Amino acid sequence: MDTIAQQGMYPEFPRCGKEHARSTHYCAGCGHGIANKLVAGVCAELDLQDRTIFVDPVGCGVFTYYYWDAAHVSAAHGRASAAATGVARARPDAVTIAYQGDGDLGAIGFNNAFQAASRGEKFGCIFINNSLYGMTGGQMAPTTLEGERTTTTPFGRDPALTGHPLHVCEVFDRLQAPVYIARVSVADTRRIMQARAAIRRVFEIQRDGGGYALLEILAPCPTNFGMDPLKAAAFCMGEMEREFPLGVFRDTGKGVRGNGAAAENAQAAPESPFLAVKPVPRAASCAELFAEPPGAEAPPPANDPSVPERRFKFAGFGGQGILSLGICVAEAARMERRHALWFPSYGPEQRGGSASCSVVTSGTAIGSPVVERPDVLVCMNLPSYLRFAGDVKEGGAILLDESARDAPPPPPGVDLITVPAIRMAEELGVPKAANTMMLAALRKYSLTGLDPASLENALAASFRKKPQLAEKNRGLLREAESRLPDRRGGAD
Ligand code: SF4
Image 1 (cartoon, rainbow, N blue to C red):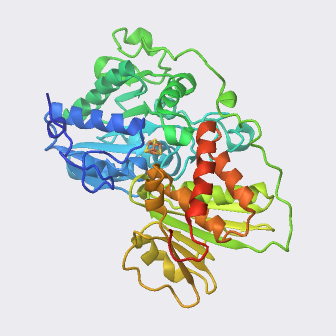
Image 2 (tube, rainbow, N blue to C red):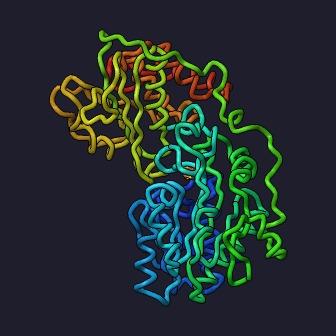
Image 3 (cartoon, rainbow, N blue to C red):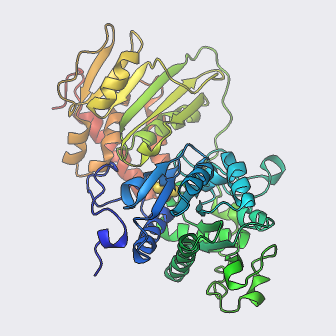
């Protein structure tokens, strides 16, 4: 059996932020992980590792330079096609492959990519379409489906407000220069095999100096779809393929003409392996899939100038539930009809390195979600404390996990409270619930200015789709609170 190294990947990924040095940073069920493996495998199989220069994007795919054993150039957001143009022109003998997501290529970088395709630059562009911005928290992308809920289209994408999904392959297929344009998927085994064949075609074209090639890969993003991996894959094969049909739009080397729909190419390329793939039957409409669960609607905020503004910062490692903890506090404020903003840190660090988010709650409209001087800082580790403690306002408070040993004193006038959040979560048999332990501390020490019941209800609401976990976490919250001392020194 091939080792990972023989398949074109480094044998270990020590810098990607996960404890296990052979795990990638991608979420479970993410299409990027499959696409990464296919790209690396094809590159190795064609013996092109020493000739290949990958141009890496900004987005969830940014860490490809940690995984693919070949040369890399890292581009600014949306600029991978522009950088690939430079690489391909400077090194015409290289196999140049740009790897881009739909926010990267379809939005900020669309003109770069489109003009490079129009000029027929000699590189291959692998374009991951998961219908939203993954890394930055699931905002609407140009490819977002009508009715699809994202963090910036919480009621579903409305074409009257935000337009229709952008069909990148179809648009590029109006150009003269590209030699290859195709769309595949990695949502099931059969599609993965077809995707592999298409990736191989992109590499072969570059190896042979053929010209510009675009391969769009439909990929599930379970995290931001808010679905488990199986449902996310079904969404990809159903709703996404209905909007973005799979197929070869053009392959001039194989006599497939361009400037037509993929379906027309069915006649031109009857041997195409893509033609047998049909979208899975419609299980539910986009609106149904993304419908708000009953009881989730909240009334609009009441304007009450007597309620002061509070600013919070939450920080720790990715995977410690930092972002969820911030959402919980914001949601509790929303339940009390306060204005609330939640602002996650942007960056690939969300997937395993350090993570942080800001929350602002207020009785009146909030001007900015940016928190430079928090009233309350919650830190799950020492690096977060060292980074943010100096920003806390005089009179404010810091909750710090006890694992952050040797923390320097807080700034004058700031209350430092050590909380055994990680240890308590482990003792309670739920190591992932350290964030709930911190919520218990916020509640016990009255640091949020919110009703304790709202905090508990917000915690339960975060498990709407798994009611059994909602009850369990209510219990954990109460238990943790009972274990925390009244005086702020440490747990029993
Ligand atoms: S957020 Fe989405 S695209 Fe990003 S790694 Fe997770 S599943 Fe993949």
